[in-house]
Image (cartoon, rainbow, N blue to C red; front, side, top):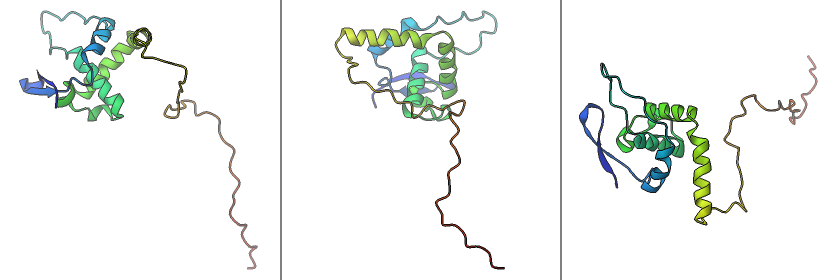
Length: 149
């Protein structure tokens, strides 16, 4: 497995995969991320997880379709809960709309994005309000015989 080593919880050395967030993608994403809040001098708490590791966790969970609890911390460099919190924080900070402006523009400039034949699939998106309620279906079973008793 290609990867690099980082210190995980408890100081143990972890091998993480860097193929989930390649260097060229990270160079485009990093400037869009909000700055971290300053740490307190007194009682600073734990060191925050690296932003790239959090992005690896987000890409892993959303790309594989696994639950946040199933994100392998050894592979991505952070827990699924940490990745979920960063996803929440970055969503509130408006990172994803900015990323959706930057990446397609870069791909168009490089001639790698063609939208002539594009399709959008919403079959995996929940209808939060339930959509239209279908009518009850008529039975296609044969009618029961009249009771003779």
